[in-house]
Length: 153
Image (cartoon, rainbow, N blue to C red; front, side, top):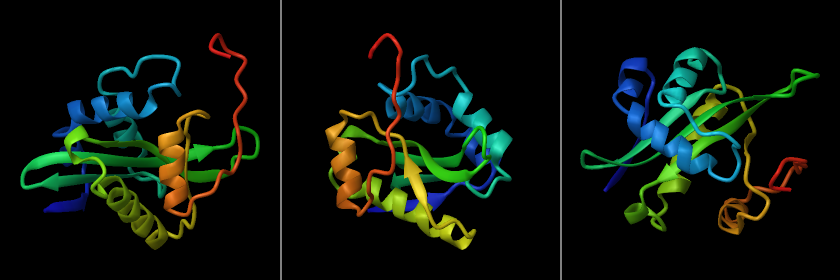
């Protein structure tokens, strides 16, 4: 049986450091243009733990980690508008298609609502049909597009 819990301390997050790196790398494949450095997700959590938009949830079945969801602030560079965003969402292959991603995101949304945050966004590569359709099944809508002039364009 899958249990979702919120990680609220740096000590608890530290125990997941290697897993968070793997989760961030898998979540951001195709979106980020450089490799995620070891410890980057844990450093982000440590530096932003006090921000309302920051959170970390873990799904476990027994003692085994099935997946994680990490949120943080997405800040518009000129206006400074802040929006909560899913920064990493990862579920182990053998736990996929069982509602674990949905449960992690629902737990994140519930906690963020308690903090007064009504919206949660996520970056998704434009042709990642699986993630896009997953979000749309949850009732999410496409809000904006990012245009990229980089080498993969």
